[in-house]
Length: 114
Length: 114
Image (cartoon, rainbow over the protein chains, first blue to last red):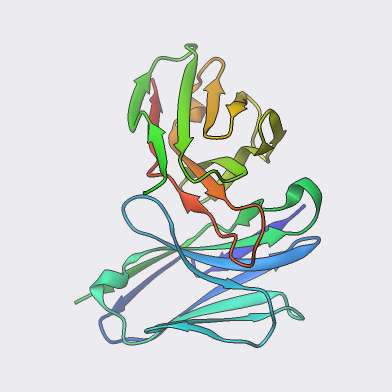
């Protein structure tokens, strides 16, 4: 059975702190790992990772994948209150009708206090 | 979100009644998905579609059915609603190929079964 596990499940920090969110996975026919941010409504896409060791960056957010150890981290530096959200990790599979199916982790609830 | 709409946005229904949720897209994407989101569980796949009249079950499909008679519409039906189906339901779409096949999500339907 495919499994995606995120940690911690919740995190409270103050503005300016740096946070690291973790995602480990066990899936067959791995294709990619994706990170999403969810505020009030629908999740919005952050990153997609397919290759080990290549960091993706967008402003204060960055992410990297380790396909040998089967995990990914999402880093947020100099956090702001607008970073408060649920961060979702998902893994996509390759092959046949599995194409495009994503298995999600439970999510990490990040709260950033002023 | 642009290109994908869900209806209704909110619904309260009674136990035992049938309920249909609608997802409509204007992006002509091949793949469509229905997920439910519950605290502590992240997003769990109910059913998905990889083409018109081509659908398959996800991990939590019991009590749900789907139909896709045209590319743009994907309907989720709860045959006889139960309180355990109280949840937020998200529809998502993705392209059939290409390096960035991350989902675009609808804004969600909050369903309460009383």
